[in-house]
Image (cartoon, helix red, strand yellow):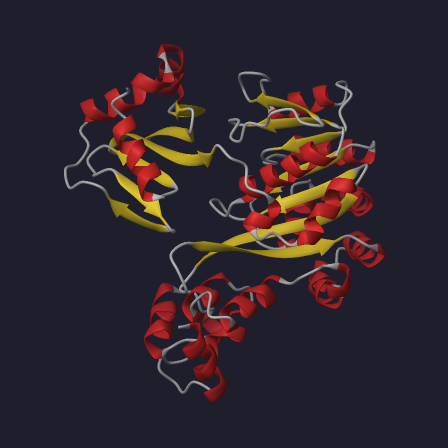
Length: 388
């Protein structure tokens, strides 16, 4: 048993998501979104070095010492696997460990809208699963791939850094490639996928122009490409894709994206107040002729109207889903306000002390600020009481 395992075991036993270790601070876990220490004593340089070097192997440790960063997956036992990031910081060594469930949850178990299953039926195009770090994007992607694996006979290539969820072959062939051990870069692996009789390619992170450009090209050539971006709604996702290109290529990029985009699943995690845990909320954009035209003309501000008017097709706007969770008493008014796109829509529902905190934290734009404690509309009070 590695020395680190005793700390990782606390993550498993407590139902936490992450372990953070760093020199000169106590080890801490993240549980239901909150970070808390698991002992009072800070970690020394010697203890950090022992924890980290023991599980990564001498070659990876040498790479980490040279580069200052290292990503890999660590299997503590057959039931507990962790995505691991080592990094150097001002106080010395540090690391973050994210627990990866060994059982892949279904889309239904995750509460993902049923319309997302329709993306599995596509024969080509680009589907983007987006959200900030820690929003459960990888879990949702894994559930979608598992649905494909159970119901379709396809060759699915995943390109990840590192491999997180491990897929067994069911009806499909699942080829999982890790960067940089199996392929040196995401673009290199994506180019190779075009020659591997691939039906579907999952890109763990679309972080640079070359990867984004190749993903669009692959989608246009007939592959179904499932990619990830760190954006929290459909409009920002489209803008991020286009803004990755230099100005002289953006017109061409808009045309390519308009032709290849099939949908966007944006995801956030909200802390629950009805019981311990968090709930996933999703914005869904399904590309149609109107969406393609909007992308070509660069008028992404119109996408919200398309989403709101496309409910019959299965589309849903993020703030509407957050609003529904607030009305059902699943999330607090403060949590809804902090995660919403249109802060003004949720600001009247804040209790005076919550509004003061949001004001102090800078969550209210300067032109929308008012003195905390101003009156709260009666309807807001009713919703707030239900949410609590």
